[in-house]
Picture (cartoon, rainbow, N blue to C red):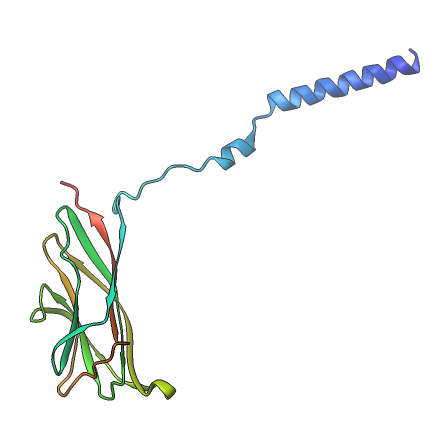
Amino acid sequence: MSKSKRLASGVALCSLVALVMVFAVPNTASAQIRPAMVRNVDEPARVPYFVSAVPSCPFLNECLLAGPTVPAGKRLRVTRLEGILIGQATSIFFALTLNDDNSPVLLFPAAPISGAFFGNVLSFNQEVDFYFEAGQAPHILVGNSSSIVVDVRNRLTIVGYLVDILP
């Protein structure tokens, strides 16, 4: 056999092996690039919920922020309460309340700190876990026995998420 025939036979054999490898071996890369579709059965429609604003202060020793009413067919899970009160020199309590400021469901203490050039500052960031049903409204309330310093930089926040209620 001549040298050119052996070279041609070798090239043909390599080409045949390459074709066999391409068509015979399964393509594992294609299975890795297609993600599986998953669904959280417990929380099929989780919608973020975030209410944050300067609180209203109907009394000298009370300020509050009212969240919107939970819509029909939904449930609200509140996961965090946050707040900052600038210029507040006395301790307070903060509460998660149901529908108004007379029905606390969770209550926590908070103490002021020295905020350097901000003066006295009271700040809290509390993880919670409470559910509100359709038609109920969450409120965050701060209060004390003396007075709350009213400042446009004060802010109260309710964080959580809405989920669908299956019929």
